[in-house]
Image (cartoon, rainbow, N blue to C red; front, side, top):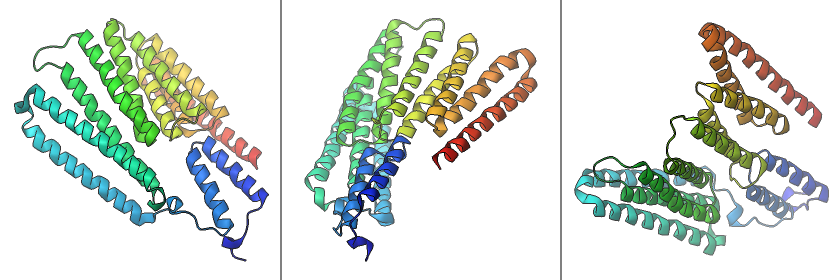
Length: 341
């Protein structure tokens, strides 16, 4: 009997769901993708045709999508060049009009694509392509809206007061954040989530400008380090992000970038990041965790040993530390693999 005419047993479905759940937890696929695989498996095994919305388009569809993005990028680049040649002559009102028109046009286009995907549900071969297109358009709309707000705050000449910069960053974060939240709800994608993370960074920068920039960079370093750690926790412990691995990389990169530097604060943060990532790797073996743990450990070693014994000794100590941590991570991974078998 062909596979298309066989009905899946309960054990088959349970095994598939278990495998899919592990992939979701590992951040390899999303919940929506797991449900799609489950429905497709059950439908095909029962002899039913899988709806068009669940069929993959193959390489042809991907090439068409890539071609569409490249064409749109060329059109956008050409428009930027044409407008850029006359940018100074447009004046403030003209520049705001251009940025506002672009933001509105992209916003309308994005939600038009969302509406088409929902109203023509059964006629769409690859709904994920429409979702990605809608998310891209809405993210670009948020970027144009951010430019619109920022241009309204920036004078044509002269310096800008710190308080004005603070309100500018907060306003940019608020306006772009609203659009990106709408994009996340209507067409979730990693691109929109990256934009949302950028708005959070902009909001924190605005708060710091309003609070007054201190002589010591320690408050800013600790604040951005904490933000990176929090975003990493969201990526690891929740299913809110479309691509949890990307969220983990963004959060850890922010924390590592904030921690790298000279002084006691940086060394403490690097040590915390190295130990925290390595401990988290025991619970959730993700490659960004062990990678950042190794990088933070090496940076800590260079910062601590290099100032006292010179770069040669620091390189030797860092190499030994790197070998020990890498070997420990490898042994842990093998033990986990043996336990699962």
